[in-house]
Length: 204
Image (tube, rainbow, N blue to C red):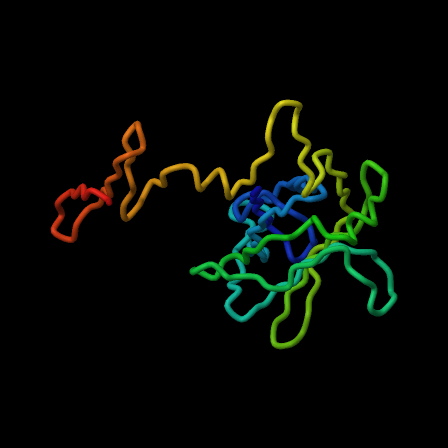
């Protein structure tokens, strides 16, 4: 899963490089079918802006966050193409983190048979019941090439699920595992006992 850090100047509504660098930052590429994770920092300008240390990070302990992609119009109740209204604060209350699904039916309908489509990306925080929109940008959502949920298997190969593959391998940490003899007639269970000793018990 891709992860992006977004630093938002809440005064200008721009993305910047970080608290110590006010240079404008590029918005990450969005592709249909992906589920990117975002860490969103809200920045306020310091008294030294735009020189050294131009921003300080806003403490988000009393804030909540909403992110959505949709049409930009004044129509009440306009449907969003995707949204994320449940964000987790980090332990130091510096950023919000969550993932944003781009595999929705609404995005598929928006793109249709085209190679991409545009929509508005918006970030809004709420404090004391009052919302404040700090970021709006017209973004492009690229159509996916490898279609989500569809696997094309080459001739002579067999499709297999990720879950089945994982089940075939010995995990890095286990409470025990079974060994079989070459002819399959004997088996033994190998494990680490609570006494710290390695055990190998035959199975009948």
